[in-house]
Length: 434
Image 1: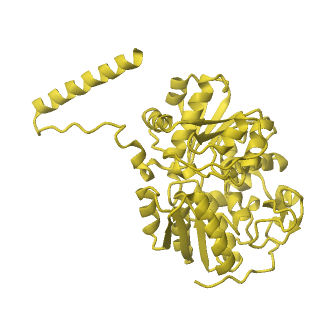
Image 2: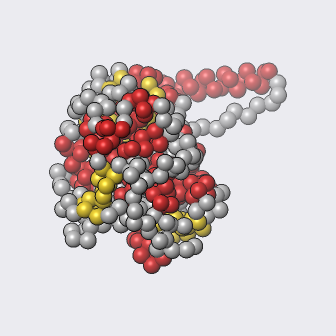
Image 3: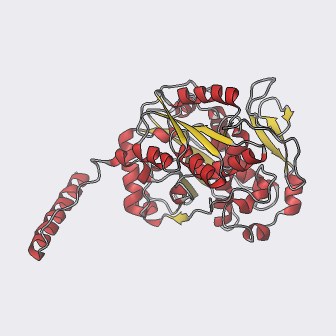
């Protein structure tokens, strides 16, 4: 696993010009760095929007690849041949049955549970990060992950022919561990929570010179999440929604959907309008929601304890920026219990046929909570982001979804079982009504 030699030139095809500190504004060459040397603020990619406006139209986007790379001019890569494994353009489902259940009129589900190649939104960020890693000369890539990111990094690294070593908490769900091991990376299972894994990875990145997608490559990696904003705007007929509800882990996804909407406005692809941003966390790891409730402008780290492991980040890097977006857009940030998360998973499955993991269950449960509190207008166009597939976290719903009815291969055995099933259904409805 060799150390990288970073390139120092940038092609004329690139529309990004620098990395810029979000706090003090200091600019840097677009290399593998993520923290400002002067104020230690996070670095973000800066673009030439006048050049993007000159190059891009709705028609040029629609004529592009059936993937996130139709938005290449908005992404921080030089290459005209990015790592494209079909990531993106996932369905925007008009969720009529769920909407009726909740009392809403215009509800959509952005379903990244079917994203390619590993069934989560992380495929977006990794496709961008590894394309940039290859441009910068890295031959070994890595990440600190709660599961989905490890799946994506291992899969896309295998496709690109890059060496891969990923770091995960040792207590991760078995489906996510298997979903990484199948691609034959080196997997380090660390006896600690995600925040401890992340600290270790920062040391490894400094000593081994690897490309860590969510550490030294983080400015490029996080830009991939913007495509969830672009796609929703395009799928709504080149319009912005009124309200979005999304899960919060580090807070990066939240901030990048916001950035994606603002960029489309900036270059004239959509008309400007107010979009409310609401975030979802689990009670067992809700540092951003706690700060929102207590009207703080800082995040107090917490020790995670929740079934929603994919969003269990106790010290969220972009938490303060997520707070700012929720407040300035008149949105909110809420948290829900593990029991409510399971109910959210089941509700989405039984109304829309979408099996989401625990992050999605958290988001649906928060949606339900916001509706009950009158914080979502029934006539708003509301988009809920589902970011991962329930097949990865089956342990979360084991014991809550019933058992199959075992019968003999005879008609009378089937009829008896069917009557028992109907009787149980009637009893369950009576309990609900009581």
